[in-house]
Image (cartoon, rainbow over all chains, first blue to last red; front, side, top):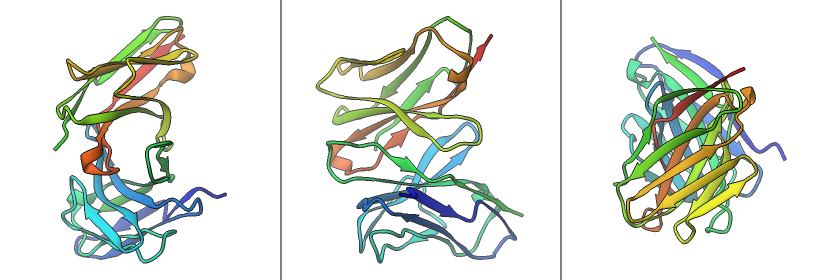
Length: 114
Length: 113
């Protein structure tokens, strides 16, 4: 299994540009989520999904859109990038239920918005 | 919503000493408390977790304690080694919020030889 795969690893955008951060997992995990990591701020939840066709907002959803058309993929869209969105983005997934709540993280995407 | 506070933000210890990181949470309905370790430039990885029906859990040199009354939990690392140097994040989840984890802001631990 490849686990959780994120692309790209690095991206530089200009203010106002749009882009999609890709996230895919091959572990048949129903739960997927996106976090952003900023210095001194920890990991903040942007959006999450408990299954195909179901998404919900996290702590910091403004400026981001998500969709979940398949179990495997959970892309994060920036419609009009702003410098405040400069951050490291992590996608994470886990199995449903409470027997094993381990979150599997992708390797991250470092995004700079100029 | 749930608010998780983590202290200290930085911690420096000598190799062989113990390290303790403390977290408090606000939502009394929270029932799952994991700890993640993130080495420089790497992804966070789960190192230990505890549920609200347990007061303490150990795994080799790592232990987590939970005080539900006071709403705080702690990570204890004994006999620290340089490879323990990393950022540690605590988190909390309550069943009412589904699967969403709320993370603390992290503790940067440095173990000096």
